[in-house]
Length: 262
Image 1 (tube, rainbow, N blue to C red):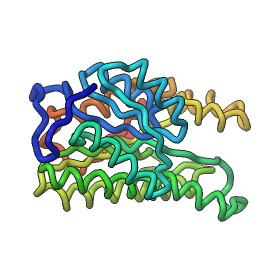
Image 2 (image 1 turned 90 degrees about the horizontal axis):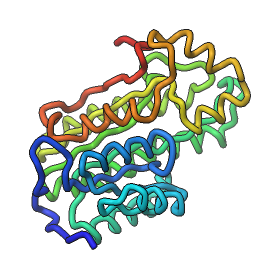
Image 3 (image 1 turned 90 degrees about the vertical axis):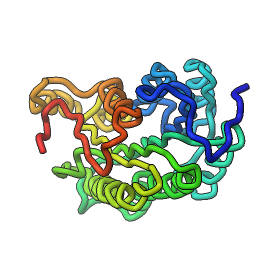
Image 4 (image 1 turned 180 degrees about the vertical axis):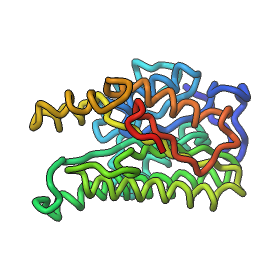
C-alpha cells in the first residue's frame, strides 16, 4: 500500500528524475499511452493508468508495478473525471503530473462526416483535455506544484486530410495549453504539449485497414522513413514530465521523424 502524502506537500524525490512522483496518464492501457506509462514507471514514477477499459488499465498497472494502479475514466464525462481525481487523491494525497493522452478519431472527408461523429471526436479529444486539466490542476494549484503534458498532434500544426474535426480539436489543445501555462505559472505549474506525427498504434492500424497504402505513403514522406513507435513519444513526454524541464512551459514539441519542421 502506497503511503498517503499531504496534498500541499511537494514530492520527496530526486530533483532530476520522476522517482516517487504521482503521474496520471489517460488512455494508458494501450498504444502511445501505454508506452508513456511504461517509460514513466521506468523513471521511478508511481503511475495511475486511467482508461475507459478498466480491466486493461488494471492489467497494465499490474505489469508496471511500483505502486501503479488502474482506474476507470471516460474523459468526455466530467463526473467520471472528477471521480478519477478523487480516487487518486484518496490513495496518494497529491498529483504531481497529468498526461492527457486519451484520444479517438474516425477518418473520412469532412463534407461526408456526421455531426454525431464530430460530437464524439470533440468530446474525447478536446473536452477530455479540458475536463482533466480543470479537475486535476485545481489540485495542483492548492498543493503549489504540478506538471501537465497534453498530447496534441501535428495535425494541429499542418492539418491532416480526413481528420478535419480531429485537427481542430488538437489545434484547440495546443492553444489551450499555452493559455493554461500562462494562467498557472504563478502557482508553480507548467504545461506543455507534445505533438506526435503518424504513429504505429492500434488506432492507426484501425484507420489503415480502410486504406492499405496509407502506411507506405506516410513512411515515404517521413524523412526518418518510419512511423513513430510509442516509445518515441514516451521519451519526449518523460522529459516534459520531469524536473529537467521545470523552466519550460507553454511550448509545443513535435515528435514526427522530421515530417513537420516548425
